[in-house]
Length: 436
Image (cartoon, rainbow, N blue to C red; front, side, top):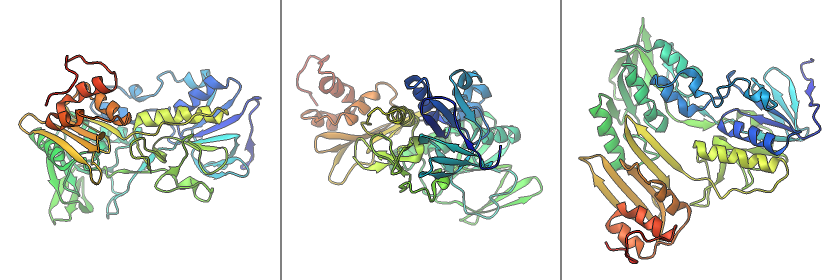
């Protein structure tokens, strides 16, 4: 095959190409196969792996699952059996006029419909020494393999970053026997998910379990002396380390769409049918900005349930159906060394709104409800693991709380009662009007 040969498909159905084989891409491919038995479906996987779930990597680090446990489908023949052509190649560019995707090896794929589901790429710290041996990210399956190959009991690990990903990998690192120091530039753990009081509670929990947390500092430079890394902080302090983990957030993987004409803001801008600004091109998952169902704004809500739903929805529209999203939803549930925290919707509140907060620092329990007029628009919690879906239901449904707002402000833990009364229209507590 010549370098620029066009790959065509023998099927009589549409030619679908999906760039990205994470949960959004796989959900789309499988939905397309269900909807169109004659379609030709090519799924591009850019890491040289069988498709896997990034959310399973912490369990691999902790030794709770074997490597095959991270696979979306353990059967390696799954894609072949469903006539999905899994191609381990990266996309380099898109020509929307010619309906062609150019691959890293120079080949070109023609398509009738294209889905971009490339997810995110780890941010790179702009510090000297970031390329040194012993410096790693923790985002891909290969990253996890590398960490497991080098970590040993007693290893000194310095981790820059304590966002969602930074916190979920703590258990795996400690399970491997690491001595862990976490650096936080902002001074707050999961600052993009939790209010300050909740962040402080999570930090106390981690410190009680042997994690050293250093706030208001970050790495200035990294040096290597023999087998040891030397981490110089912005405070001037120098930390010795065997492993340095850079976990400072992610950015949508967009480089290959440059020059394609696709409208991009922070992520790829899509309408409610997951269509991009380029005809016959769709996008789904962490790479997109979609309408948020609470605020109505276009934003990235990078969580797996949104990715799966968007992949399926895009597939319906790719085969010619008309299906629209109800909006993506900001929803995070985090396990930090056994402490469960969650945030939903506009957890930080809105201008002119009010709130109800319940804080029990001794027992690591926290609940924060955010209101706009008499509608619950967001919530955050620590230590509440039962029925938290009721909070989600109240927020997504935009339910007018009426007199339940006063009851929730007096006692935020009554959110389940409010949900039953307002959403399920049942009164299991034998009183029509809530009593504070």
